[in-house]
Length: 151
Image (tube, rainbow, N blue to C red; front, top):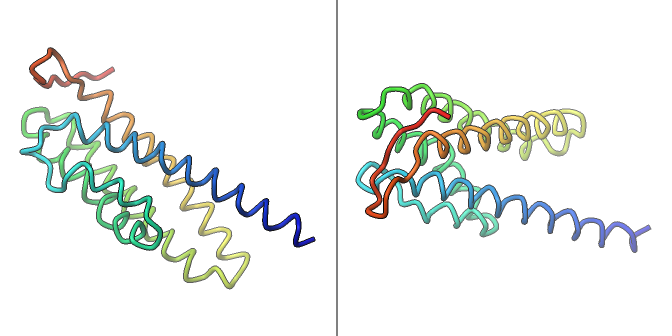
């Protein structure tokens, strides 16, 4: 039985790490489209989420405050970004609260599983919001001028 559990666990964590890398890449690309003067946190900070244990703390900082705050600051030029920024803040904060609660209640199998599933749903919604932000702000020209587009 143990011969099956260990390889399955390693395979699961490898898949989780790859998915996490793709999320970090998507988040980084969305942040990169916002000029640095409007970013409250550096765009490269998202890559620290890949470090075990430290990534949990960075996620608490970046998900609710990184991209949503940058979008809110940049929304002075384009008001259509403000609702997306508020939505991302709420989803990021909810995701992190659910992840924390699922870790705290992991010793209760049913409650921990429900919280984990809810956290996964909100994480996917947050990721979709990052992709939407990336689509709304696109780089035009070689000089790095920014234009807002609702696609």
